[in-house]
Length: 296
Ligand code: GDP
Image (cartoon, rainbow, N blue to C red; front, side, top):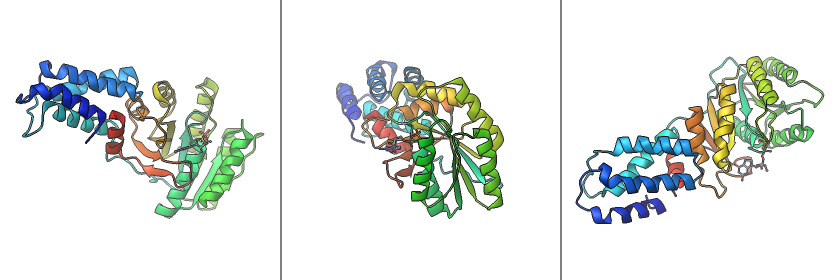
């Protein structure tokens, strides 16, 4: 893998050619570079510390094979560990439930919940041939309900109406009832997001979770969020048993370090990546590809 970090590490180990092992002595400078690369990618500091410690433990004493230098070997270890941390190979949406399989979308306002709800609806219709219903529990922003209606139509799914006068819990019950009666396979529930974590919001989404008993509770997070992603992820993961993460806006400039932080804090796999504003801009998350990007 050619990357800025790889080049830096290669320079560091030029003078170490012929050393066959990664040792405390030759690894310190290299780990410093790895640490810098992760911090530059906006991975949260405690996550970086933990990660570097794990890499060090894995790397120390490793024989360096054949033509690899210790620097190249270390980059390999870092890449594999990054991909493993971000859940390589774990993905796809779980629909194993008595229909309708409910998918609850959680996250801050602006993270991309509504857009992702519609993208997911489209994907489930086209790739899994499912009959999909969406509903919005965002009673605080009438525009959000309308937005879901519009994008649901684009996705070719059905939209269940809700209004700002209703309670989110009542909307959830009504949508679930409708989905059952009309034999929907999947009910996607978009929820209210605030600009910051607040207790009332967390209570509300916990109630929704209890009513809906979702098979997937997806935490939608903006890849550009950087250091704050840790606090957001912690708050949502304390409140809800998250089953997966959707990392949105991976088409942006950021190195996407949030992926590592969020995965670390929640323990939930990153299932999808948002790759554009368009309705088909959702891909199964590729941890190996993302690892290369985080390292830069
Ligand atoms: P919500 O408040 O969490 O429901 O967020 P929205 O779904 O309204 O999305 C907020 C903004 O982010 C909108 O302008 C979306 O078009 C945009 N957006 C969402 N996902 C992506 C993505 O993967 N890539 C890009 N470029 N924009 C996205």
